[in-house]
Length: 255
Image 1 (cartoon, rainbow, N blue to C red):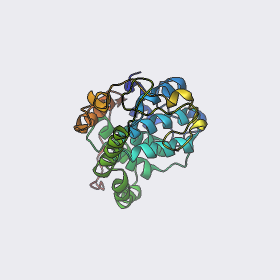
Image 2: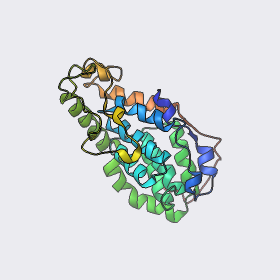
Image 3: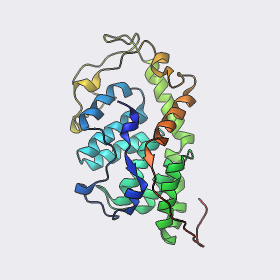
């Protein structure tokens, strides 16, 4: 299934709804079904940004919001801009958590860090709706988020995990020449995920010949910058933004 199906939302919809989003009216983050998301997981092993993201989407669909937030935050520590975008909407609207527009904006700023035009537009919509007091809190609180989730630290963290996974490949029964296969019922990365509907299929792995074959279309293990470019390209094609209003604020602060 194309990764592009994971994100289906519009800023116009998200920012025009009432700030307090009830669980029953939770913002849609994907048009993929729960089973389709579950089927994606085997091919995402070794890419924690994508794996935690899809686990978060599964939890979100089941309205297990604290778990979804936790998994999106885990994905965000591995430079996942999708998950940072999801968190911005969750906190902005208070889906399964109290409304926190400052935190919602900070996550939006992180999601737009690479200059994606659509995410930048969403960030600006949010900024225009913050009070001057909230904008001041953004300045005070934002540095701590960037120290943990900004690309300068999060990308190397993700790349280290991707390479560690590739180095640990050791044999196969289903096609990897160097991939140890977990059996059904076992943990993924030391944790059981039964509460979000994982099943035996989630412990299988995709068929590939080698680590470089696994990541080859994304640049191989030595050129992971190409992998990030592909992630950005997919994100660029899946977030839509409605018309923007021109907002002039004399008290606007640099970010």
